[in-house]
Image 1 (cartoon, rainbow, N blue to C red):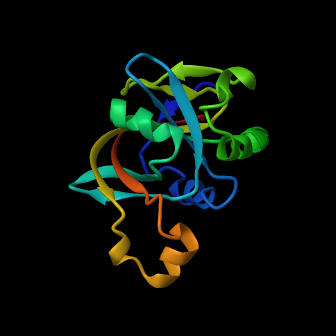
Image 2 (image 1 turned 90 degrees about the vertical axis):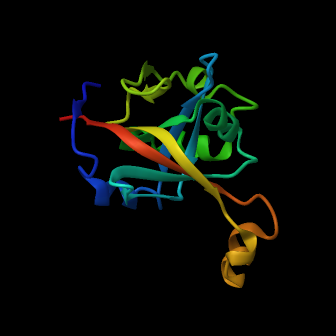
Image 3 (image 1 turned 45 degrees about the horizontal axis):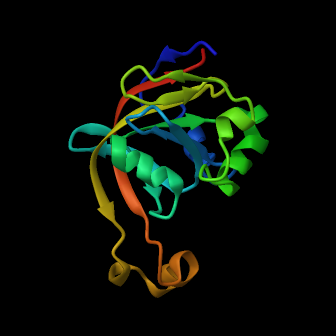
Length: 170
């Protein structure tokens, strides 16, 4: 799929709505070139430190966590409607057990600004370099969120990814 450079906020409202259903696809690669993809539903985009930032929330138990920790980069790929079923698979199957790209014949291409990949069938991609991270502090959560989202364990790491490039099919 041919993409053109677009402003980071191009179709932002529509893309953020997809977080609820079916989710967006976060990809990261280790320095050895292996890559993994996961579906994300917790994220936001805004301006922090005068830079466009994509905040992506990843639990340490997720396989993708070790990829981001090793490389400090990720891409967020906006799935096309044709990828809806695969997006669900990426949210329920771990890359520890299967190669989601190979097993489902999903084509990828190198990102332009970060050493990872993008998903060819996704009409829009954000390329991000981690500039900061925070860990959720359990004591600072409301009881309602603690109970509904965590139950006492596996608190997210929030990655602040500077958006170095945004590309969309035109």
